[in-house]
Image (cartoon, rainbow, N blue to C red; front, side, top):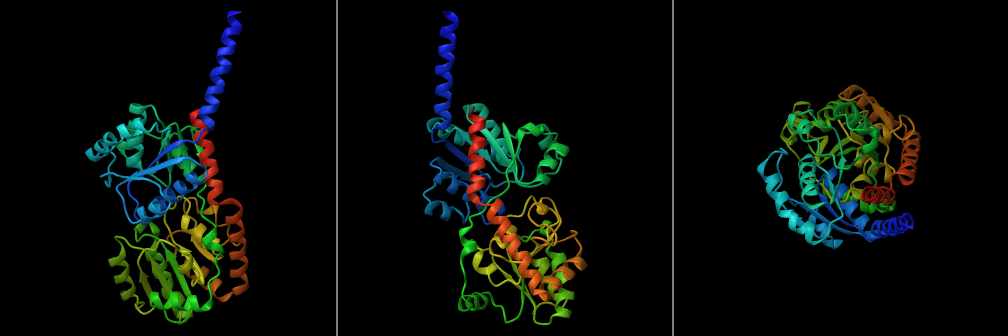
Length: 389
């Protein structure tokens, strides 16, 4: 009879655990800032998708222009002074301490971190509050002392591509059983919008573009994005197609250097710089070829956006890009840091309209089938449930 009593108690406890897992979860997303960029956009869109799944979601960060998107979706934001480079900075400890009461008072189930700084903070908070910690690795980390001493990957770590998963296993010795491969997903609706010729002319005018083909890149102006190799490539492209223009959309530390490079190469009249934008569909609609010239890339969120809008793409075969761009099928792949190959691929797509259209259509189909925001959010949701078990 005692054995039966224990069995009944276990059955009751198991059912209570299942009820706990099935309930709407309370989730805290932590990231360093919400300025325009790949990780902040990922966090904001994930938050909106999780809210659609009826979960309570809060974001904590040092803020930025994307906070406006949270306001529109009625997603709470907690401001933290954590916009620092080092995970060992005193502000990380201070920021974490300021969240302890919030996590306990609101019974947060899962803390989901997205940058190295917040990974350390999330590990500390999970230890002090009893909440579960999940992290996402969005790219590639250097093997610094802090990362060796404080691993802080959480109970599970999401890798956004096969290349990132291999990086975690090979370079940081993270167990494969601890890693969940969940590719980035995007909202597919903007890519379905059809822009009229009048609207495209208005966009071109606003950006300061004249008539002629447009090659474009949307990325922060950082050396890791390889803009200088694209500018070098454009020297040859312009020599072949006189009225072609390069549109560089983004901001960052490399802007002065890139402007100087365009002037040295005699491309000042053929290269247009534009500030970061929150919605890419309109700008993508006027691009004849989209290029991502990265030296390192976790996956390439902007590649998904370009393909969703049926833009033919040329991309460096860096990091996890191969998960999206299959050479001569959904785009053209070239070696990183190779301006000659970049130029040849760009010219190929500008001159062969049938090829460009085929690649664009294949790419759009791939994104709609495998890289939707809904699919990503559901997989993240399932991972949270697994951790709660």
